[in-house]
Amino acid sequence: MLLDSNDNLQEVFLGCFNHHVATAEVDATPEQRDRLTAIAKSAARDLQPLHQRIADARKQAATLAAAPGIDRAALEKLRAEQVALIDNASKRVTQALADAGEVLTPAQRQKIAERM
Image 1: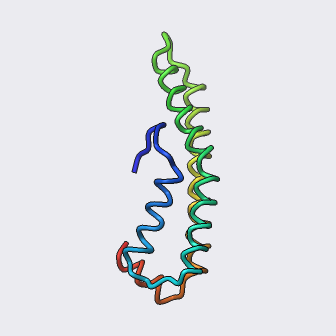
Image 2 (image 1 turned 30 degrees about the horizontal axis):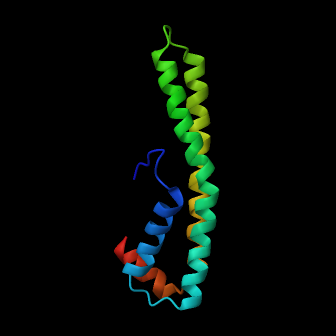
């Protein structure tokens, strides 16, 4: 899902995260649900600044594209920065998924995997 700068990343992340747990009918205990919600909130908080930096870079790319001349070095620098940001975001999401996996039982994880 692509987000625009008006989206609340925490709500989107929590919604997706909780949707998979709830709709998979994994019979999570209240304690598991609380722990999973805390994991999702923490990840969303960590991802929010990255989301803003990506939005800012989109504006910078537009400025570079509209310039009278093409600054290849600036475009390459921007591209490299964006790759690093996306890599950091991917690492944080992976960490959240691993943390959530440790909260769930193997049978619960299997139910989620079957519905992904």
